[in-house]
Length: 178
Image (tube, rainbow, N blue to C red; front, top):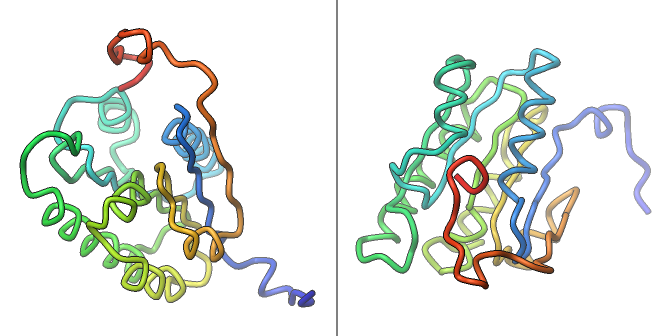
């Protein structure tokens, strides 16, 4: 096992919240709240979320306008549209943030899904993650996390579905799901 230097112990971490259960974005946003409590500078970039109003977007715009919060994409991938093109545009923005964001925490919400659907390839994403500013912490969320990304992550939490009202025909609810 490699012995870590003091600099290694202070380096930003790569966290990955994945799995087929509900709560991956919620876990990331909970971490955002914790970071904001300590005065960290935070950015959130949502892949595939679209412009549908969400409680998290409303919250940050209203109470924490200093948080860079952007949603890209067309929403659910079962809907028609150029999902790959939107994911690529979101990745261009993510790569800019990985390189230039002078903050403490960057959330790349649903990046795993963009990778899992083949809209992006791990070979283009991994070098940018490795090349990020040394102190930048990154959280990636979404199901379908590729093995190469999990191997590079410092923390992986797999959130499993045990029971979900959607399976009983209950639609997503404002305030609980979006």
